[in-house]
Length: 219
Image (cartoon, rainbow, N blue to C red):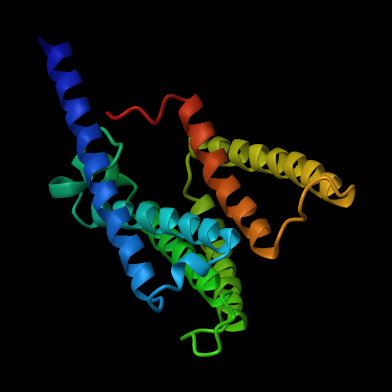
């Protein structure tokens, strides 16, 4: 009976996460598209669309964690992959910092993708978007150093493993893609592609490392 009840709770949690993710993701996409002039979205280059999509993922992750951190008992323990509200309360500072960093990165990536349209009447230029991203990266780097001091051994190990996996991923992709482009076999990567590789690769590495530890299964 207990096993059956736990399985029911797990599936309800998965369904809730999927539903909220779909709603928030759809709302985010509509919000981004609302910034565009009618008919402008189809003119976006694939590199812009990919980077903007990655930015939305970061934003959704930050929103999920942020809301869960603010209301651990009402929302957090149901929406986030934690055992109970106490887990969130014990690590609230790090989770709040991670949420803010993720939201900032997501917004900066979306702005850069939008600014890369080169439209002279766009609300933000590509140069301004770049400096915003650079400032966000600097702040996130400082925040990461501060949070590192409070990480336990497990989270430090996960961070190291994710960084190593990301480095290997970027090495393989950059060597193969750059070499093939130099040989005229494929199109050369666009500047925004490099950002998508870096930030998208970080997401992929994080999910792989956490998944290997069995930490993605809803509690």
